[in-house]
Image 1 (cartoon, helix red, strand yellow):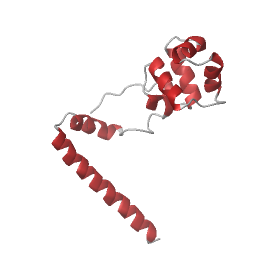
Image 2 (tube, helix red, strand yellow; image 1 turned 180 degrees about the vertical axis):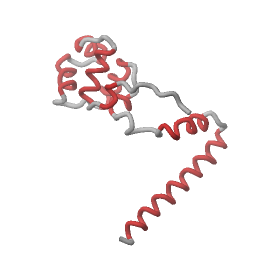
Image 3 (cartoon, helix red, strand yellow; image 1 turned 45 degrees about the vertical axis):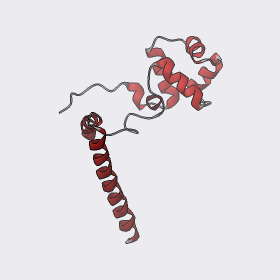
Image 4 (spheres, one colour; image 1 turned 135 degrees about the vertical axis):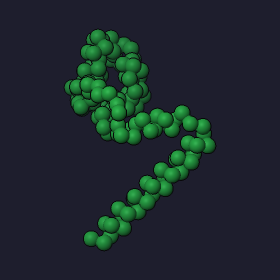
Length: 126
């Protein structure tokens, strides 16, 4: 059983809103963030008002400056990664020896292929 943690509100936002919220949470001004990332302040303003999207390189630098993962900047809370039901199991598997991980990976791949095949075949019978 996992403890319930409050979800930060910025996790359910669009990229532009999430960027602004994280910047403010970190106590950074747009100018300070721009300097840390190596872009002009107008770029940060445009990212935050949603008129443009950063390049992959700038996204990486934003993540570093804000001390978050790029995934956290780009994806909603439940859009990436395992759900809470599987998170603990994946954490346990990550600590296993390589050959044990490979066995579990092969089992998962087999189950995924089986599931996808059922979906495709089930869709053909409609």
